[in-house]
Length: 97
Image (tube, rainbow, N blue to C red; front, side):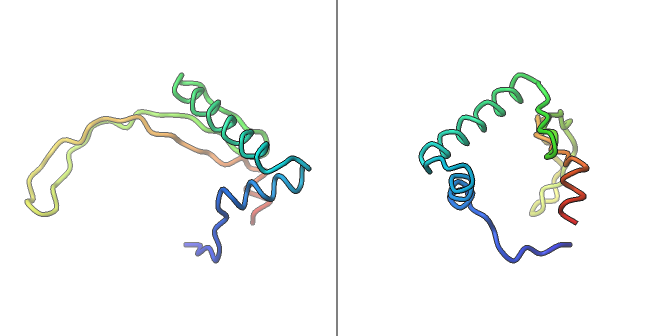
């Protein structure tokens, strides 16, 4: 398992994108907020989002399943739910090795 030595926060990401593009941090923040909003709307409408050289976002149904309560040992049925799936693009995978 790979251990990460540092974490990039949203604030740091916005600052780096703003520096590289020459945009203000406020404009960059609004752009990122709108990008996430568009992606969320697409996923809520069962669309697949393909970001070239990055990856693919989609949703899938996770069926209900039997679970055991850890304290009581009683079996329960978990609810079915929809989850977001991310598949990394091969280009990005190769660049990060």
